[in-house]
Length: 326
Figure 1: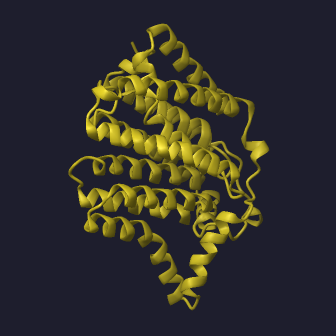
Figure 2: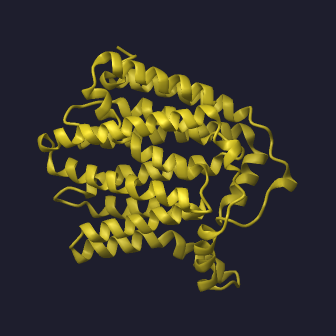
Figure 3: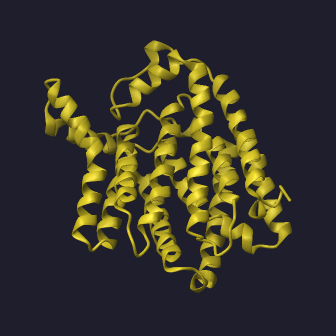
């Protein structure tokens, strides 16, 4: 049964997750050490401090990588189960998120990418509870807070912040919810700008720096990152996602209103962010893992609706490609 990811029990999902997290920790510990003179200042505000931390504390970085992997997978899986977005309870998101996390985040340096993955998982998981008839304001605020913090870690993530802001303001007609959305998503950047201003810098200039960083080519070498196994696993994810969208069209009327709202937001985010990240000059591994995290919230429907042979074969291909990418 453990090979049929759609029918994983909780303990099977957690066992798979812990195994993958252990492999991630070992692989991160074996990454080459980043030389101090190779750390480039600039880019997103927190990139250089995070890279220096990774260079100085490789063992702690490996432990944090495992922790980020576990928390990201559990956060997304919990949200998908709680709001029953497939019509049937499934723990498939645990294993799928962990596998894509392992395949797409391990690069030199990696701690910033993994932190973005964690923030995106937290943001999406909390956002799901805000798409029903009754919005929980503290979940809305913390979801926007998590997504709003991502541009401080990776410049390309400002596109996610803008998209989240537009989507939520479009869907929320309550002035109080709109205010919470705006405050939550802008608070991390405003806090950073305030700190810069207190240190003698310009409040508006630091905000403009974040905008310009998104439009400035990054030092990320896409040719070295997009290895054959990563290209292959992205192709499989794209295929599964396209099949999932078609399957959803035939299943949507059986789902709750909240589940349909979640699907609408996730599909819109995937449809918009994929070409945006392709076109942005500041795209990075964080861009790929963000799209993958959104995709994994929907992919379990494919494994639930396909027959066992197709489901198991596709899952084994993803497992093999993820291990190859490592």
